[in-house]
Amino acid sequence: MAKDSQDGRRRFLKDSVWSFARAAHEFVKHRDAPSEKAAPVPRTDWLRPPGAVAEPLFLERCTRCGDCVKACPYGSITLDRQNGLPVIYPDEVPCYLCDDFPCIAACGTDALLPVGGPAEVRMGLAVVSHRDCTAGQGCHACVSRCPTSALAMDFETFRLVVTDERCVGCGICEQTCKTVNDTIAIRVVPARLLVAKGQDPDAGRGSVSQP
Image (cartoon, rainbow, N blue to C red):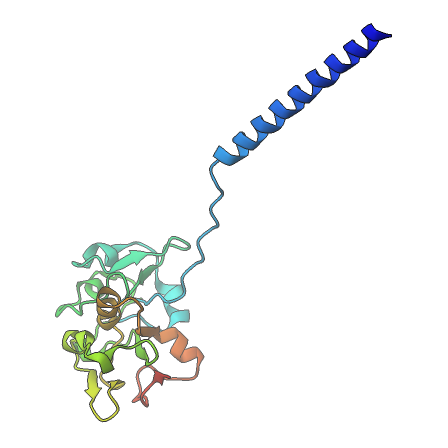
């Protein structure tokens, strides 16, 4: 009986050690395993290049050739990873409104149509979040960078004002704000989203701002 009791204790200790070692191995394996990264959420704040026709027609005409991407001297135009269509992310590299618009000249399918000049471009409309804007604290960086003089400071309210008829949606203000502030307070609403909201990007539009 004593021998059986000793054998039983040995088996119990052996099994316990084995179970502990296996549990420790599994813990280390899962601890050191690379964590699964969530798939990035597709961005919807992209702009079409200057001269783009209305979105439904653009989707019909654009062949995803990438010629406009190659023609852009600033690298503003990139291809959407989801569908290969040309887009501009204004907070990264905005459109600098080239005098000769080489991107439009490079388009052979009329997905991008000639414009008379920078003032005729309608990629979107800048919208200010006054909660985040630091214009009242003396920041006017976007005003000085706007190529169409669409931004101004209202010194009565100490708020940034967008003159919608002048705004072409190039995104220079958005990229500037991102560079100098912790929070982006001015963003460009893409033309296609303005149309979806019932606003005409080509018409004189009342001032758009957010509280």
